Image 1 (cartoon, rainbow, N blue to C red):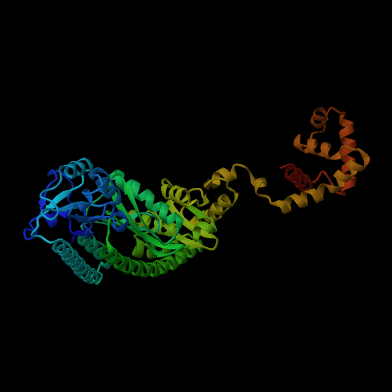
Image 2: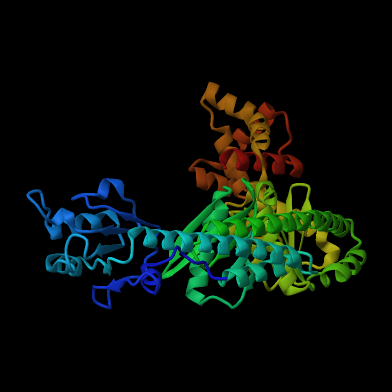
Length: 503
C-alpha cells in the first residue's frame, strides 16, 4: 500500500456537501497536505498558525482605519507555510475582493470561496474526519503489513521472503547488503547500473563507520533510506529502500523487518562460525600433508579445492579478525564453486587460489587494507612450505600484497634481525677496537680481501698498498681475532658479519 498523506485541499473542494468554489486559476497547487483548518480575521494571524494549514476568513481585516493590504496579508501567509485561503462571502461583503484575488494569483496561493450557507466549522470538521480516517487506514495497513511480513518470515527462505513482502507492502525497491557491502538480495527488479554503483558506495561508507544508524539520501532524483543491521561496531549488513518519505506507520513496518532480518543474520553468523571452524580444520589438514582428506571434505561442502598449481596467501592478524573480509571471501567462494578456499590459521587468514588468478587476494587487500603475503605456485603436497613462504612475504613486505619471489630476490641476509646485527658487531669487535686504539686498518683490509675472493694481489690494488702490507695486516687480524683465516667457515662467518653491520 502506498503511503498516503493528510487530506488535500483538492479533496476538500471535491466535497459536494461543502459547496466550496476555487476562485484561483485551475493550475494553482491544491495537492499539498492540509494538516488543519483554522479561521481568523486578524490582520496578521501568522503567530498563531502552523505550516500546512488552510486559513478561513470573512475579510473584516481589509476594512476600516486599521485595514491591511491584501498583498502584505497574502505574503505573510505564504511565508508562514499556509497552503490555502478560504474567503467566506455574504458575511461582511458579497464576493471576494478583487485585490485579494490579484494578491493570491501573484503569490500562487490557492483561494476558494466559502458560501454563507457553509459554516467554517463544517470545513474544519470535514478535514478532521478525513485526517482521522486516513490515520485509521494507515494503522490498519501497518497491522496488516506486519502480519504478512511475519508469515513471510516462516517460509523456507524466510529472509528473502520477508524482504520481498516489504517491497510489496511499500511499493518500492528493497535491497539487502551484507557486511562486506555486497548486494545479496533485491526486490523487485534491478536498479539502474549508475544508481546501483552510487548506492553501493554509500553503503560502503556506512559499513566503514560501523555505527548503528538510519539515514536518508538522494541519488540523482531518487530518494533512498538506509537502515543498518546488527550492533554498533559489529554490523551485519544494510537494508536499502528506494524511498525517503516513510511516515510513522511505514517506519514501524520497516523496524519489524529490521528485527527479523537482524535475527536471521545472527543465525547465519552462527552457521558461519561453524563453517569457519571446519575451514580452519581443513587448513591444518593441508599443513599436515593429508591433501586427499581435505579435497574430499571440501568437495562435499564447498565444491572442492582450487585446482593445482595454487598459490597460498596469508593476511595479517588484524585483517583476519575483520568479519567483513570473511563475508567477502564466503561470497567469492560461493560464486566460484571451489575456485577459492580460505581458513583461519594461527597468525592470520589463509587463502588458496589458482596460480593464474589472484583477483580475490588483490580485492581483499584493496577493500580492507589487509597486508598479504603470497607464495610461489605449488601443489598441495607443498602446502606447508608455501605457507611458510607466504608468512615470510607478509612479514617482510612493504606493499599491500607482497610475493615471496620479490622477497627472495633480495637474499637471505635481508631476513636477518636486529639480534644478528648485535652478534655481527660482537664478532668484529676485536678488530674495530684495535683499529680505534692503534690506528690500524684491519677491518678495511679484511673486507677488501674477502670481497676480492681472498686474492692478496687484487686486494692490494683495490686498497692502493703493497701485497706484503696486505699479508702483514691479515696476519695481525688472525692474532687479534684468535681465528684461522684459511678456514672456509671462518671466512664465511666474517664475511656475513661484515655484510650485516653494513646493511
